[in-house]
Length: 204
Length: 247
Image (cartoon, rainbow over all chains, first blue to last red; front, side, top):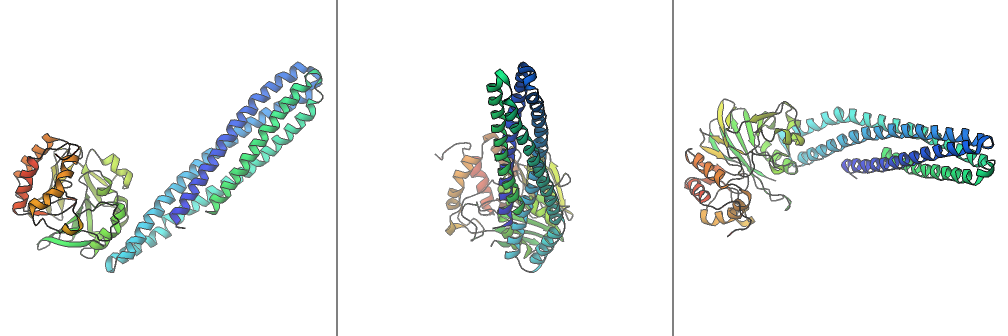
């Protein structure tokens, strides 16, 4: 596989990451709305649903934090696209220069050799370092997000337990807590795919 | 690989045509690049697309040190004319690219920096290479709305971009036009379809008729020389242009 093809594959993985980020942001928005609804329900259920109310507020905060985290991830993927696109463009130029060297002789060949050497040791090396740094930061942020979502999952499970003590509104609260679990399950699925794309992007 | 043919030489003043590549992939249109040399400086007219850069660079470097190319002249904005810009900039970051003011902001998408482009006004301008005066001649709307040709009064050669271009079959692809009537059949469809303005065509014919031209060098096809130059201008003046199909 040529370097240009590898860069192309990296870009496709970044597109994959971005698609999953969009899904997570949309789901986090739904969790936020569901949590607001749950806070009102808990108020109606009064003292029997105090625990559920606290958990709903925590889930709402979780949804807001997750949206912020995903917005930062999105910005980082934009940075990644810029770096990989620049590397792709440079790889294409290198390919043309290598082809040129293949058909040149004498002065032409030595000029192309010098140009390729200075490219590989200068600008391209710097860009590669930049790309590695962005990938590293992206991995760290994804790991942080996975932890955050784990917390959300615990909150949703606790909300389900608390729903059982919701008195007359117990059925409605159970339904809401199931919605939380379902949404967080979707987010976990997206994060798994996102992690896979990120791993393959770094490996490409 | 392309070949470099010297078509004019007078001491340190030369015109080198970089032409024909038998190994060129069939889906790429064939192009001619012209290098105008004055002593140790040169300008390259319509340097070509990035896909053919290896062939152009290789043929050119056999005749001239490519790092001495001070400038590129881009007759218009098409990819087969100037998409190799970023590669030429690699060899000389200070290289200048002369082109119509209309296209500087567009062609910069192919490469170069703010300092690369020297814009030519609609009326044209003089360009100096190693003390040699060249004239950028307006050819707007033929076919591009910002189109220029390059005239060398000393060598009496006009680089005419797409005007005079012919799509030649492999068995009739000599460097010079040898049989005008036969050759022009390969140019007719191209000129009818690509050249969109009859008024611009008449203006151009009138303008270049006043110049002393020994050779008219298009970016595709063969070079017109001697009496064929006048023949071509007369033929073009009478051709109906801006039509979808040949009559």
